[in-house]
Amino acid sequence: MGLFDAIGNLVKSQLIDVIEWSDNSSNTMVHKFDMEGKEIMMGAQLTVRESQVAVFVNEGEIADVYGPGRYELSTSNMPIMTKLQSWKFGFNSPFKAEVYFVNTKQFLDRKWGTSNPVMMRDAEFGMIRIRAFGVFAFKVADAATFLREVFGTKAITTAEDVEGQIKRTLVSGLSDAIAESKIPALDLAANYDELSNYAFQAINPKIQPLGLMLTSFVIENISLPEEVEKSMDKRTSMGVLGDLNKYTQYQAAEALREAANNPGGTAGAGMGMGAGVAMGQMFAQAMNFNQQPQQPAAPVAPAAPAAPAAASFCPECGNPVSAGAKFCSNCGAKQQAEAVCAGCGNAIAPGAKFCPNCGQKQ
Image (cartoon, rainbow, N blue to C red; front, top):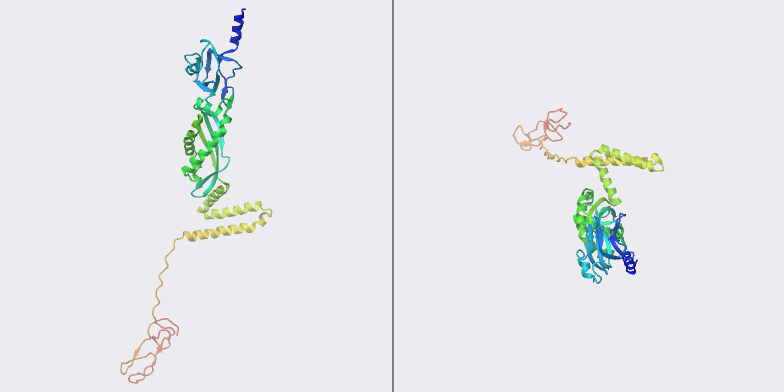
């Protein structure tokens, strides 16, 4: 073997003729191809699999970007690299470049949640704090932008490296979505899909400058403060007021439950149970009273004016004389004695026990 053949073999051993990457992990977003001190040979074979993008970087500057497929690296299909490199040694000369494989698949089932409660104003409960959690999925939408803005020159970038930034953006976007939707707290559970879609549309533009995009966003649960949940439970319990007997039974059952938790047993809580039942009955009576329509009061008839004392006339001259008078004031004739009612003054028959006019006992 001649000297030139030995030098040729040595040079060839320092050249890379196949460039590819098989992803054996589930969370690697960017993988830097290991050059092992070698240089890429012109005419080398580049294989980019589905859900991958290969990015060539020359002296810190992004050159060519390749999507899925098989390529032979030459001046014809490396226009930017050809422009950047000075090919002094002919068509088959080696060149220096860094190759990054970017994973463009979806990263699924990423958990998110509110680390601190989110404040919201509710028309019914006022200012309340809520917590929420769910899952989301994302992927790299622009490999070149992602390289410049996120992973830089790192050898490996994982989903966990960018997940924190996305989560904080998600929580901020969800808070805005809940506030702008003005959905009452009691109706949040019935509007998870609407809130998810609203937040999805609001969050994507915020992570687009990083070369990323959301592919899904799901709200699994929104929990209300304990005080609000207790108030809701009370309202649900008060629904039994539709049947007042059931309400009384509910009061008794509550008293028995408290008695069971009381160290003094049912005897110690008997008074409480009795008070609960009595309160239920009083409340039922009040409800019945409030539910009964008010009847208009019957008009009170005015008292009949007292009948004037019956007047009599003198049998001699016909002049009227006072009831009970013994002599006529006009002619002085003696008047016939007759009985008069002490109540109304009406003349009654002698010996009558009751007045025929007013009914008073004589």
